[in-house]
Image 1 (cartoon, rainbow, N blue to C red):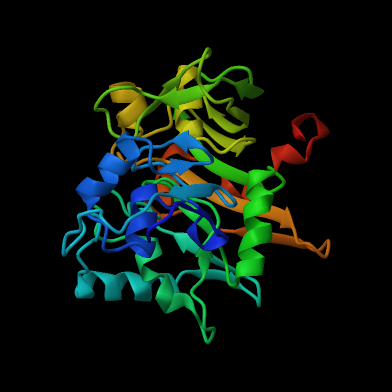
Image 2 (cartoon, rainbow, N blue to C red):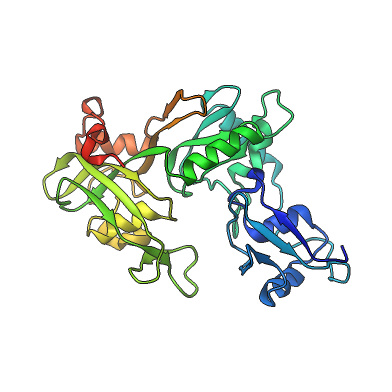
Length: 334
């Protein structure tokens, strides 16, 4: 490539890191060389400078400089090592986790502890196992949204480029309603509410950690409702994010002084309860997703709690059978 060119991000690549996007389309460009191109502003996203870990969005334009004299290396640093045994086990796990499948949409249960996409030190992730979920189609299903590594629940995939496009649009335009279940530690008041606190990434070497940033952060809005209360000790809550910021629900609940049970990353020791048999894992679960298809039909998919959360519900005496969706109330509608 001897001239500057522009490439648009397709629905296939939504959510992909910029450095991994380069690894996919320009595998001969060395990682060090790419960093230099980004640092000097020769590679830009929608005309702006970007870092290697920038997550791409549908329709963004990437500026590609002349690459004919850019040094290359034999094995790009972003190329992940494949562990055949681990990948095969994950592929089988995902095949056994199908919640819904039609010609357009595939919904799977994402287990806690497995990342949706690769990152530093992550050799096993859902994106790397999607070829096993073709089910007769020529194309692999496409990611249209993400869940945190330690969050379980419903994950939707588009089975074609067209399906991925309208699904991505539903999440981007916030017409897809996602309801989460969680347990929070402490005395949450009032019993229902809307949290409107902007979020930004914590500066420095903190990994992927977010913070409340009222001045320069991106707007983040979450609705919550207490389903069942255990005095001042803990509450089972339902959450509905109205925006899609990284770790949004976890940051928001910690900001209220009631961190999600098991969320030591944001709540410290205050995110744990002393009780025999109670898991120290994160208690946050993407329980259901509801959205409209282009033809007006409703798609609703739900997932049962993972084992560690179900056990905690039983230990704390929460009655799952009594659940009544609190967001059907008009006061919680967007």
